[in-house]
Length: 243
Ligand SMILES: Cc1cc2nc3c(=O)[nH]c(=O)nc-3n(C[C@H](O)[C@H](O)[C@H](O)COP(=O)(O)OP(=O)(O)OC[C@H]3O[C@@H](n4cnc5c(N)ncnc54)[C@H](O)[C@@H]3O)c2cc1C
Ligand code: FES
Image (cartoon, rainbow, N blue to C red; front, top):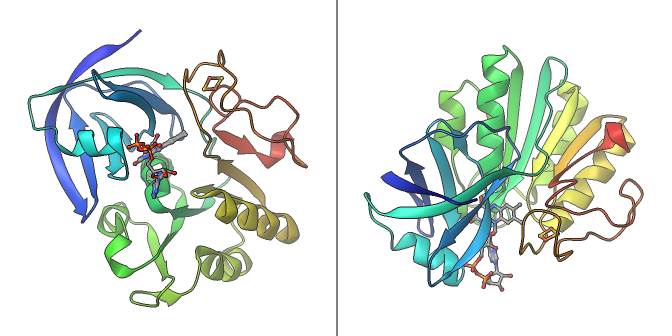
């Protein structure tokens, strides 16, 4: 069932990314997502960047996301959710790792973790300095921020795994929580497994119904995921301690 939610704020995060703040809150967990529908354009899944008020962060890459960027304060978006399984915080020390819009659900997770008194560090990976997202928002929460860029224009040069490898050793987090491109998640899963650290990974998949009906988000079986694993229903977050 869709709810029409009015926008109260649109924030520019970088040259192709905006955050959209709605009038109402949504009872949900970090890592869950909503399906956001723009009539006449289409419907796509978006991670929840904050729950109260509901906030989505959208990178303009195609028809739906670009139409989002045309929206003004006062206009409405049709939203259904929250959907899927989110992250579950464990222990006292959390290491977060995000690439691209993957930092959006991690901001919500960091907020919850800090409220519970946990120590939190985040590794933010991007192609260039211009693509880095949300560093100040994490710093305001009291989170340790570690940036990597592929071209070396900000922070450590390389992929996000360059930073997480060392931090897993030095911080010994109770779990690693990550969201981003598939290859990044595969590399992080390997790092965490080798270090004997639990990980919770939010997988990207092509979604249509968002509720376990169409099968379009079925993920290939892997070491931890059983055949028939649906990213919209069983995920998007997969937890190593449940496999
Ligand atoms: C669980 C889940 C959560 C998601 N959360 C977010 C979110 O918080 N914010 C967000 O912006 N998107 C998020 N997405 C992606 C979003 O659902 C859309 O896929 C995206 O907005 C593109 O849709 P579109 O119709 O604008 O363009 P499409 O026509 O679907 O895509 C246009 C082209 O851009 C490519 N593309 C898609 N995403 C990206 C990207 N991030 N960077 C570069 N190229 C890309 C596509 O492969 C395609 O080639 C999420 C997806 C899933 C499954
Ligand atoms: S999107 Fe339809 S089953 Fe997951």
